[in-house]
Length: 111
Image (cartoon, rainbow, N blue to C red; front, side, top):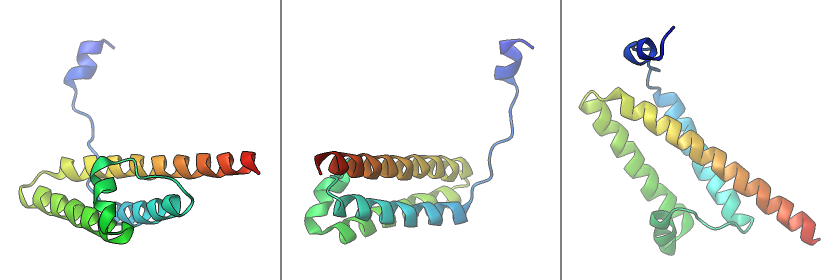
């Protein structure tokens, strides 16, 4: 099978899932708050500036923006945006977990 045939063929695109989106938002909030509690810092410049109003308020503002993006994507019939956001937040949650793990390992080495 040639490379050109693979590029021309449209594969199955994942169905956007609002359940996955909501679950990832909750996991993002929980892992971010846990990471901050363990001494990690916020990696996003946007969120780190919002953190001046407080971590929970900053995260709620960010989640409102995410929900608005999904609502707009669905309104304008752009389901791929929802799928992209799900992949994006899955990566963010994974990154948060890595940072939590590294923070814990760093603390364990100091003790």
